Image (cartoon, rainbow, N blue to C red; front, side, top):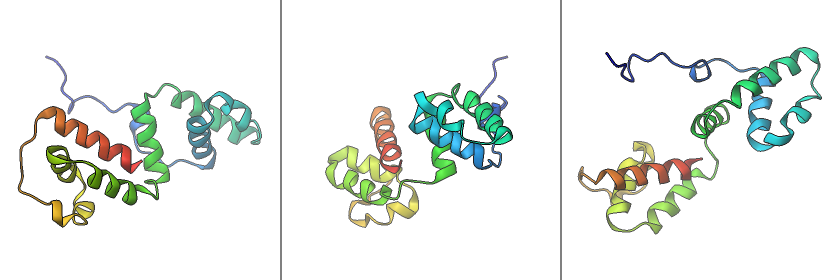
Length: 139
């Protein structure tokens, strides 16, 4: 019997855990200055440096989507996300605009009542593109 998404166990890096300062710095440095991350973490005292280095090694095994999701989870959504989402909705046209508005979170969708419509069905590719554009504009 093949495993479904529901019965797979979560990977360790995806499990929610409270991160300390060394791990958060390692996450930031590993994402922003990947080639120099070890060098930049060398300024920590021994115990925090070991924790940060261990987390950095774990982080290097993540795919891009996991890394971006973890960054957003730990540091929040980009402060310009609202403006970027508004630009996205205004610049899109037709079916893509409707799919983008439909894929917005309810709190954000209420900012665009002029584009609100019924629950339309969109082609899979249009829905996927709209969801990806919203995700990228929110980062």
